[in-house]
Image (cartoon, rainbow, N blue to C red; front, side, top):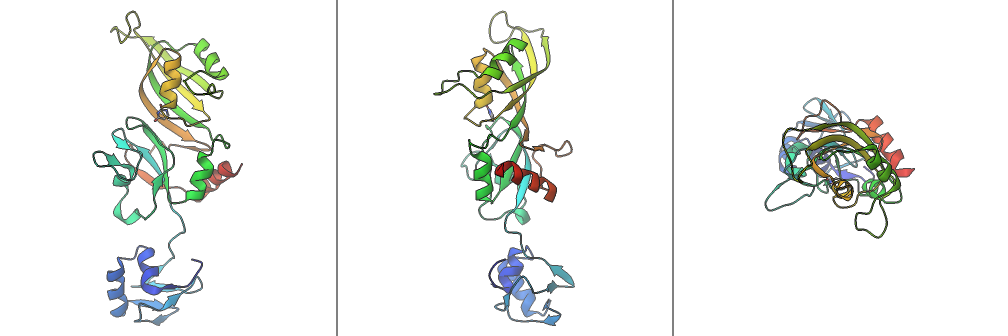
Length: 255
Ligand code: URA
């Protein structure tokens, strides 16, 4: 809170109620500033002032908010959409603020780690191609993923862009021969992989696997930079970043 703000705005921004609700609370004598009852919604408040409503201290709204969201499939990485649910539809009313948006995009069918914030400058840093913030994905793939594929991904593959992809790290978690013949004749292998990339081009992981003749059938982002999807955060749920997590993320954006 850099400049003084009206008491009713301070309370509404802090989540104490809507602007008209908090005006009523003030007029009914439910609000004290620095220990004194005040009945003027227009009173100017600064950081120095202590505001108490119904016996509870009210703290100024933070400048920015940061939510770590476990995106479900079927949700689009946008703030508005006429057909599909957007990430904002998963944010509870009390936590919604003007200017919230997802940092980067996951495809509609991709699940997992997505940061939602209203901090434009940090998002810009994290998405900057110059920063190369790592992103790690778990994928199920039809086809037999091999160490040769890992070597090719480490070198960079052609996904139809001007340059080859930047070196990526592939870990083969498992690969097995399934009972049923799938897409391509003779190819009834399936694999599970973990792939770490340093870019974020449209459909990047899917296109990288396609370049190796494999098809991604399930995709989930596990981590972004220093932060990983917490194992106790179910799909479709979000929680605020802890201070420590935010610090880590900021240093990834600044490095
Ligand atoms: N790569 C993809 O192909 N899709 C995503 O959603 C993210 C990375």
